[in-house]
Image (cartoon, rainbow, N blue to C red):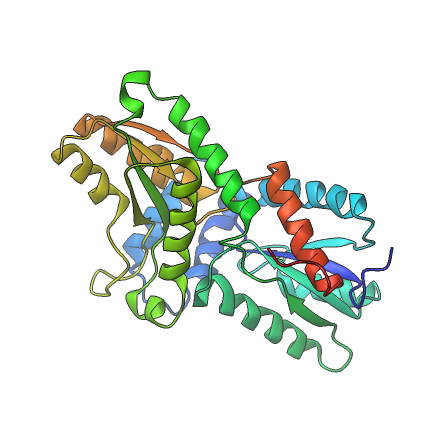
Length: 315
């Protein structure tokens, strides 16, 4: 079936290194112009060294691409799917050149971030505009799929993953467990110019209501800016310490700001946060990210259908 005005779908993501030789060039791309101390860059590089220099985000995006191809075929939408990145190969500019060579005149873009802020939304738009401007006349046109922080299927998947995590706690700890919804911290100035905080709070609230979560809080992780710059708080580590000080015995981490288990989840939560929880005597479990959960893939299919057919209800 025709996909309306669109010839293709682009999954646009952050990117990550594929081996140790890629790590420092990748981090140079990520941190260029941000004033991050060299010492902090080396510290982040060590995180990747623990995984052989291979970012899990790349294979996870390829898995999403395969799952979404099946979803679009199920919907009868004839849209080839391309995968491009901001910070590492395949770079978005190269991918759009390939799309042009393949005859794509207009494409839809799904960005792997469900929340609105400069780094999670507008910067990706700038990447697309820059790539097309470099190509000049004849560059494909594009539209970006809307953010989906409050889509019922995103909330449903998050609720189900919270329940699975809760069930891994010892039975006597479940009722008193504190849920910490985590998201990537951003500079306070960037947050002030976006709906990032409000959307995260709404997603967390909707999930808590759907799952019947009694005690929860929105916290942040993975800050990377200079110490002098204010970033969104509280930090997840400080929040875990606060749970222990207030007499809590268990924490459920829900990385609501991430759609896959990439480095900020595997290192900052599964390693650092868990080590801290063990240190202060708090039992910790971590909920899965949406990944390729069938309902999450179905949600992306709905978002594509919205743009292909304006009569599609926007949930």
